Length: 329
Image 1 (cartoon, rainbow, N blue to C red):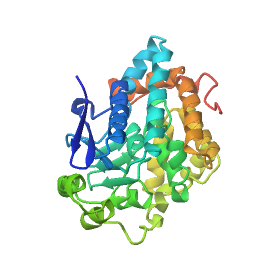
Image 2 (image 1 turned 180 degrees about the vertical axis):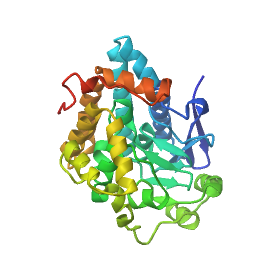
Image 3 (image 1 turned 90 degrees about the vertical axis):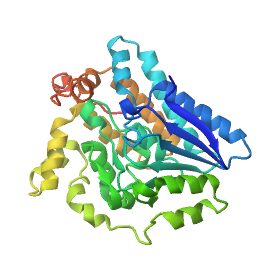
Image 4 (image 1 turned 135 degrees about the vertical axis):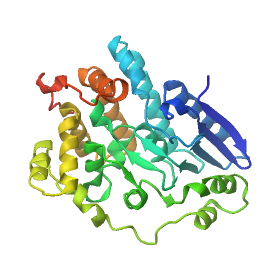
C-alpha cells in the first residue's frame, strides 16, 4: 500500500503524505516515492511549482520511521539502516536544489524528518496548528535531515536549544526563527492550496493575499528565557548555567537534558559546532557519519523502545556506563 499520493492539479505537482496511523512517519518507500514525484514534476513543463502537504489533519509528518530502523539495528542489518539515511539525505539535497518552487503546507505536527521535507524548500506556510520540533536526543539519536545546517543559523542560539532539548515551537516563535516563511490559519489552508494550483496570479501575490508575513521579525527576545544558557560551549556548562537560573523555562530545559541520551547530546553539540558555517551538502555528509555511529550504539535501540514502542518514557542509557558518552566527530 502506497503512503504517498502524487497528482497534477492545474499548474502544480502535488505530493500528499498519507500514512495517518503513523502520523506520516517516513519509511524508505515514501522517501523513494517523493523523489520519483520530483522527477516526474520536473520533466512536466506544464507544472511550475510543487506542493507538499498531509492528506489528513493528524499531522504533517512526525519524522522518520525509527521503529523500522531499530529493527534493522537489532538484527545487525546496518546496511539497510544506512541505506534509509542515504536515500533520505539525497532527497533533502534534491529539495534544496530543486529547479521549481517547492511549497510546504504545514497544518499539524512537523518533527524530525518532517522538518527535512520543509526546511530546505523556498516556501513554508504554517497554520496555528503547526508544531515544530527536533526531539531526537530523547530517543538516542541526533537532529539530522540537514538540521546541522539550519539549527546553528537560528538567532540567539535557539537552534541549540531546540536541537538539544527537543523543545516544541509554533506560531510567532516559529516564524521568528525562520521555521515558517508565511503564517495562516488552518481554515485557510484549502483555499491557499486551490489558489496555488489554479490561480493565474504569482505565488508571491497569492501568499500575500492569504498569509501573514511580518514586516518585522517577532523579537527573539520573547524566547530569551527559553534560550538562556545555550550559548555555553559544552553540555556540562549549559546544565550548570541552567541550574543557576530560577525560571520555569530553565527547569524544563534542564529536565529535558537530564532525560536525553548523554551520548546523543554530545554528538548533537559537536555537530552543531562543527557545521555552523558549512554547506548543506557538507552538513549532510557529517550527519551520515553520525548516523552510522548512532545505529551501531545501543542508546538508539533503548531510546526508541522507551519513547516510541513501550512509551514508558524511562530509558536506561547504556552510554552512561560505557565511557562513550562524549564521542566526538
